[in-house]
Amino acid sequence: MFFCSAIARYHSMKMEEINKIIKELWINTYQGNDIDRIEIRSDRETKLTGLRSYNYRVVMIKGDVELDMRGRCSAGQKVLTSILIRLALAETFCINCGILALDEPTTNLDRNNIESLARSLTDIIKTRRRQRNFQLIIITHDEDFLSMLRKGDHADYYWRVSKDHE
Image (tube, rainbow, N blue to C red; front, top):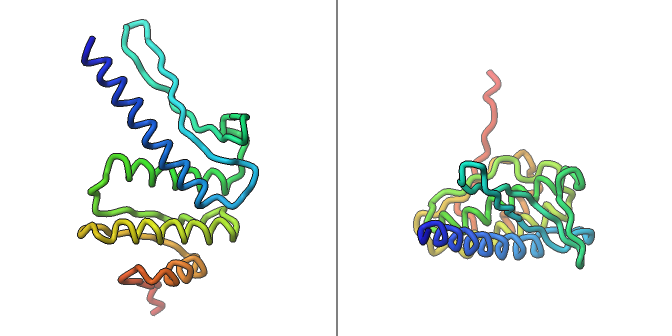
C-alpha cells in the first residue's frame, strides 16, 4: 500500500511540475486572447482488477471557465499545445537530455504565434546553453521562422539542405 501511495504522490508532484512549465510556456508564447492557459488533467480510475490507471486530457482555461480542448480549438492551437507539452515533458523528465528535435513546429501557426515560438525557443537555448551536450534540432521550411531564431544569435550552426538537381 505504501508503494502505491508513493507512486500517486510522485505522479501528482510531476503533474504539478509539468503544468507549471506548460502554463509559463503558454503565457510566454500564445498570442491569442481566448485562452489564458492550458493544463493536462489526469483522471484516475480503478479497474475491476484493482489496478489504477490514468486518463489524460488537455484543458483550456479562460478566467474561471475550463473546457476540454478536444474538438474546441484551431489547428494552430493544437500544434502549439503539442509543442509546449513536449517541451514541458522534456524539461520535467529529461533535464540532462542532450537533444531536443522539432519537426515543422510552425505548421498551422499564425505569424504572431510563430514569432513568439521563436522567442520561447531562443529562451530555451539561452537556458540550456550551459548544458554541454544540448542540441536543438529544428526541421523547417519556414525561412522567416529561421530568420527569427537567428536574431537571437544563440545558435551555433544552421544548415540548408536541398535536393541536388542533376
